[in-house]
Image 1: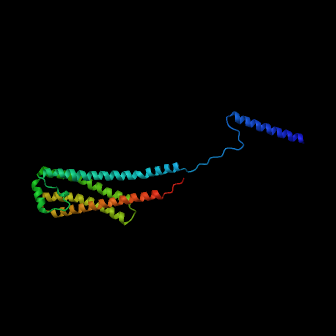
Image 2: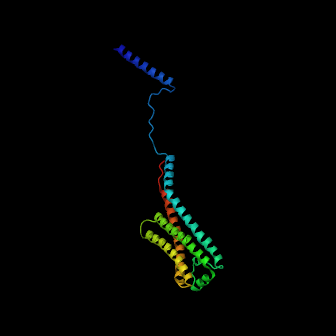
Length: 232
């Protein structure tokens, strides 16, 4: 029996020696235990990558809103600071009614109509049909988009959208009323002047309100990023 034990012990030692020699020949040190299994985990770099990807996805609407607002601001500058100012060259230096935020009376419309010939009136009509329509529509669209993007569903969002649409209607209606008053020799100037004043009030109030909505949206985004847990 002792001989059998010695044979088994000898064979085990020989097998172990052969295994160690094989591992040494393959360039690895002999090991008595298998290598530990690596389990996938969450790293800080992976978390940052995920947050960056999420921010990029959320940033797409932001870029669209910014592009719309920049385009609207450009149209405002083009209409009020360039085109309407150039129209004074055709009216003997008299300002166009569209730019007079405090209104005007029928006497001013009569004076303006006398200073503008048919070509100048046609040029004003062309301005009203192009930039005079594009700007109010773009501004109303900007109000609508910012409201949908920044405000929750409710009365506030609905009233904001209605106010934006009202501005577009008042602005385009003002264009028609101004041309009608010029053609009628001052008749209807009161309606045109009222629409001009209302238009400027809506423009200023809605611009301030859009700024407040955008600031509120930005603050909420900052708080959400700060409160979002990052797993290391």
